[in-house]
Image 1 (cartoon, rainbow, N blue to C red):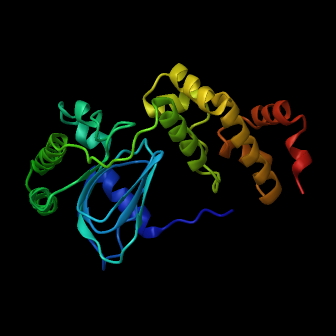
Image 2: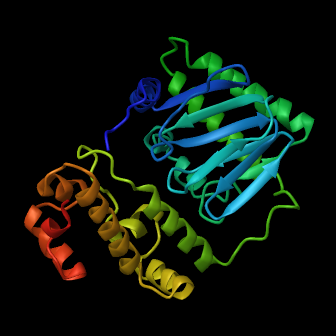
Image 3: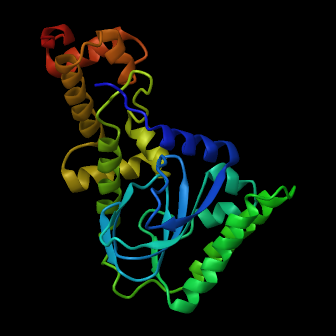
Length: 288
């Protein structure tokens, strides 16, 4: 299980983290920009045929749309037709929060759990928002001393324009809050696996970790997960960690200390005790 690093993706992630922001044009003929969705917010204006997966919902569209991606909520996009175009900007929370008025915008229905991340646009609305993206793309390459503040203003403008739009009437009916938060928790849990490198240990290991990441109270997360699945949050986490530890013990040549660190345990003895308490046997017994 060797870690594969995409050089282009790594360079692009590094560039955004250093600058805090990147705007670019979406082009059918371009290779696209690969980036870590766990690290950045995204706003995109696209025209084409897509299937978006956002938390526990899916949206299919073949008309101009404005999409808002939150790094705390799993999402993906399938291109269903060869032709697509538009614009996108990716930014860190720290970049936008340098402006005092940004806190409430990131908590708006466009970004929050259970909100409305996709808005369909008329041709007039598409042209208006496209012009803002074009200004961002032009501005980011200038040497103007206050260009970052201008770019923040452009982001704010897009968000406010979107907040004025009514959600699409044919948006899928939302599941109840407990189902939504449970679905997101389970996908976030699964997204951490498989563990492919000892250099990037497991980050979310407890119910408190997940609740903090999702900006909800731990008790609320626990109640929701238990109500929907019949099992406590910790049971899901424990089962997934144990399954991964068995896979690493049986299918890698990593020593047990490396496996312990990769799974987020501070000391190998903690992992040994944890594994034995759950499975009734020692980790060594699973080695081929």
